[in-house]
Length: 433
Ligand SMILES: [Zn+2]
Image (tube, rainbow, N blue to C red; front, side):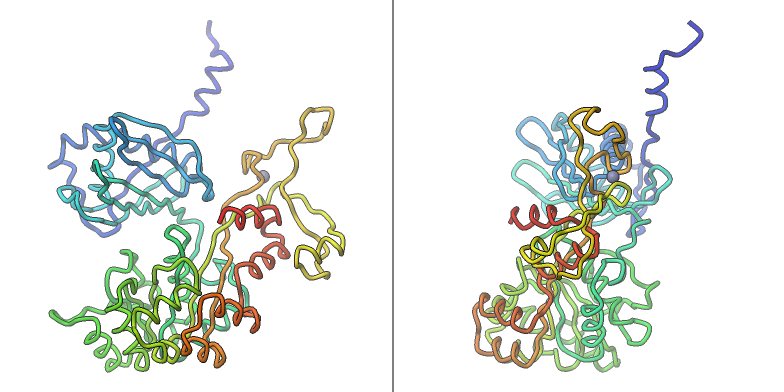
């Protein structure tokens, strides 16, 4: 037969160009020639894995050894999607290969390492943020796939509300400590970068100090501060203050010692950092505990931001509906909201809705991409008093409500009212925690 069968043609059309790796983000040349055996064992499998993930629009890839095998899984818009498995040796080769491509030390398998790979897929540029971490029988690899066309750089990109943007700018004019917190993978670092840009690095002198996740910020008028050899963080912060820096972004404040140092320098400079805490309330109590000085924290802490991600409605197929006043009241939405949106129902049969067309953009999931809702604890005079009095997390939460600060709940409803997501998605996200 001179013709391809229909199935063959479709298969041809579905042929996916594999991902192309374009070098390590840290500029370290992945010396492929010197690692020919690893390249032979791992490059094709690594490309297959990443290609499969990007083709499915995955934001995260995880690969780790489990017994005699290695299992991998994807997150798509933050929702776990089925992955697969491969022989353990292949999993190890893929892990080592991706570490090499990310400019990491492939001989080091007992320490956490992080880096990134520039990549291209389907005409789009990606940054693959690679992290390896030791586990019982090998290493776990986590890759976050950042589509460079999706800009999440500024407060506006992240969809922060106007009140929040204004408050960040205001804090940016002074000194003290401004933190972001949240569970890992919730976008804490992205929020910190956006916050940093929110304080206008063109108006103020802003530095970064430390590793800060390996992201270059030079193009944003943020300079990297090189510490003098032998200087500790405290001395460096003093030096920055003397150099008339307005603000500095440092590596996470994750130990009592770091917290003590940072808060003791808070009156000289604005320090921005992440801190590991599940929410803003527990972050405050943790900082008080770490520093052993509630008054110091109350005086120097300016604010803590946390965020939670949820799925954004697919712009192509989202369905408008007119909510009843009673419904709005129950949901806690203002009665002025005229239109809400939801994912369109999928009919059971063609008779049910002959006009139904499956949405190709979101593969009928109704959602496409993610958006963040924020929580912003601002240290007002009243909040200052609460912190100084060593208030419990629930008292801090109550104070935030009293002062109508932005909470995850209020911010989620803002996004529903703006038509960016659905009430159903908000309910799903809050139920999951
Ligand atoms: Zn859609």
